[in-house]
Length: 239
Image (tube, rainbow, N blue to C red; front, top):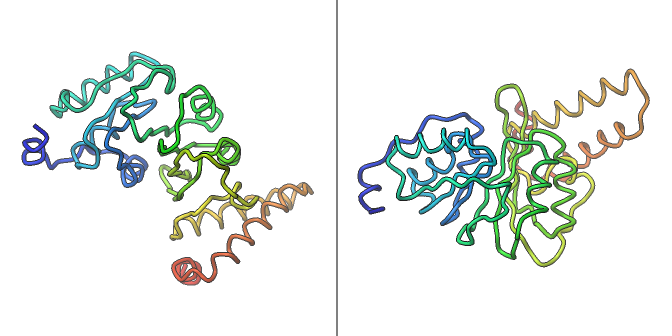
């Protein structure tokens, strides 16, 4: 039983900083990890009592074999099932939170566009590039970004987006489309904004492109909007 599991299992499976950050926002009763790799997200969510049930999903058999090994090694076969799926097509209806991380925005959008979404369905999304077009797609399809956080893992910055399907569009500014919606204000995000600003300034020193100047203005806008936020101010001043 789950009660027995709670008594016996306290040890989480070692995983990357990125997976640990994703796990912090996993809270669905029944979750599905799309592109599951070794099923570390689903298995750890069960072991840590954040979810009661989960599906490890992938389009290829190889990752599912890895996932099955993790599930069996941790005695979670009663709680986690493997599913050979193309994205979220044919996903079980009891899923209330879907995790799609570790791929490009275009692939995430492709997966979302083919899914049977409904109001109240929640997502954790994390792309490794083109996050602007992902936010744009979410806005245009009534998927609200509840909150975001920026993480730094293995030399790269990645946003994690906590989302929910709604019946109406979300009001998002241009600066938010580029640099995050309801972003967690911490030292990682401050460093990310600095990194982006320096990147665009370096480009502008070599070539005059208005779109890069525009992005620098968006960063200034975000800093101005958040300067009254005590946490942001402290992180910014005490760097």
